[in-house]
Image 1 (cartoon, rainbow, N blue to C red):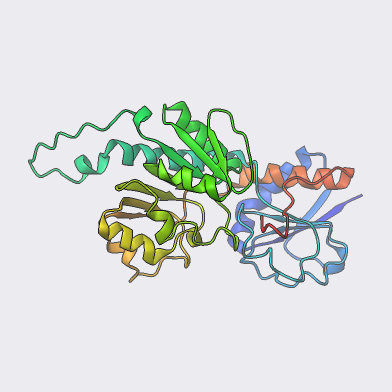
Image 2 (image 1 turned 45 degrees about the vertical axis):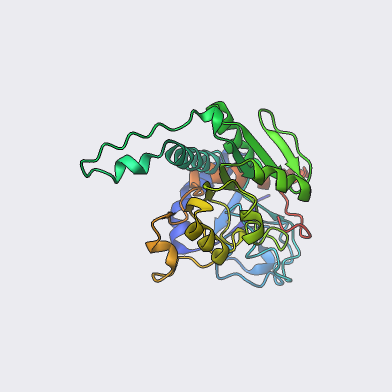
Length: 311
């Protein structure tokens, strides 16, 4: 029986995914009709980007699951018309690899003080020797698939890595903490903090004036997670006071980041345009195809969002 799969995203993304997703479905053994238009009552699965034209899921009465193209679901999880199972983009090896490379690259940049020499070509002999990695504690806030991969990569380079999550977890090579007390401990000893939490009401403003003050003076921050994890005014104040030495920010409350936003011109802030973890069609298509195969085989879907938790 042919499975009808609706691709509900931009025309640009359709160009990127049409061939690779059709191929992945074939390789997964799924007889699928993949299109950008169907009568709603004939759709079995929806491949979805929250920015798409589809915002009312009510007519899709036959739909078995909505398969999000991105890891973040904060822009769709609260949609009251979405009663079908919603699955996140997790275990996309391309997305994980790119996030790991961004985090490791910028961690090493901050750790080694590379900007001092890259931007200091003015004839001054600035002899700065950074500590070895074993003496630079790193904390990862968020121990999902991305947080675990980044934490283990940094631990493999010798950094002492503490991972924090809202609920208890165990990750090989990492010191794992959880809960409110664990957050305090995780921040108090961190010279570099990496934010990889989802955006939920519970995680919004995780870094605020109070929690930033817990960090050792001169700590550094990387945020490839979600813009709302940081209270912007508190971070700017901490940068001005020297409490925070530098922040590398890839995600923001409003994107693109407005031209007049103070982050752009701040000498202690690096802005990257939400590129840390880009969903890649070749690897993401395999994740989507596997979930459709599982749905048709009566197997449990992977990475189903817990609506109450928001991820």
